[in-house]
Image 1 (cartoon, helix red, strand yellow):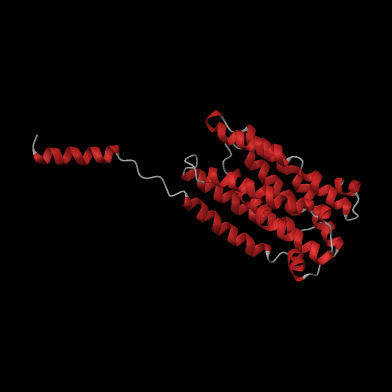
Image 2: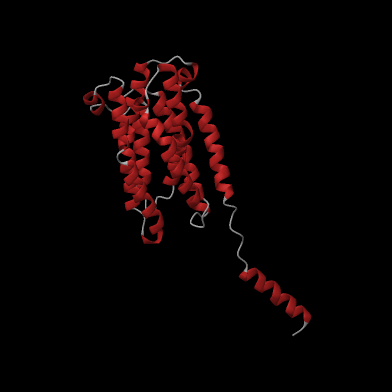
Amino acid sequence: MTSSEISTRTSTETVEGYRPPQPDRAGLLARLSDVWTDFEARLAEVPILRALDDGDVTVADYQRLLHNLRQQVVDGSLWIARAASNFDMDHFDLRSAAISHALEEHRDHLLLERDYVAVGGSLEALRAGRKNLGSQALSGYMFHEASKPNPVGCLGAMFIIEGLGAQKAGVWARRFQEVLGLADNQVHFMAYHQDADAEHTGTLDAILTSDRIDDDAADAIVTCARVVARLYVMQLTELDEI
């Protein structure tokens, strides 16, 4: 074999046997971080959250916020369970994670209901409430996404919603207490999610940085995160608009 043949063969084998390195998984988290930064900026412009930051909220405002959140919180475990049912056996790990998460989430609305009653709200009126425009859009979108085969994009929704609980809910709970003099048993729903969702985000980050997430999955996750961020802001802005 001549030197040129060796060179040619080596070059061909290198090309045919070459596998490009997997994209840096931090790349997905970096993209999601950009989505989160935009989300935070939009949250800062939500009227009730601006009022909370300024110390210009009332107990009625707090009741109103809980009332509007409750209608979407009820749906949370339902679309997660639907997503779990649509993962095939090749995605068994994601199915298992979704099932576990749905189990943890399906009682969340009960915590919220207790807080609502503890600040003088009517449980009957709360349970008879309807989703506002943003909640309808958010739930409709999530059930649509969760109904797709292997709905890995739903991880983007979890990134936003669990991140909100981990990074914002506790802050809001303490601020409502400072401004309104509320007791711990009146802000339990928000305070609870600071710790519970911090644990969830740790589990989620492990999935997002795993080999399970390829480029197509990453794109779906980022798109879903962007949509959910916008719709969540709409939910908080369109209070009582049905």
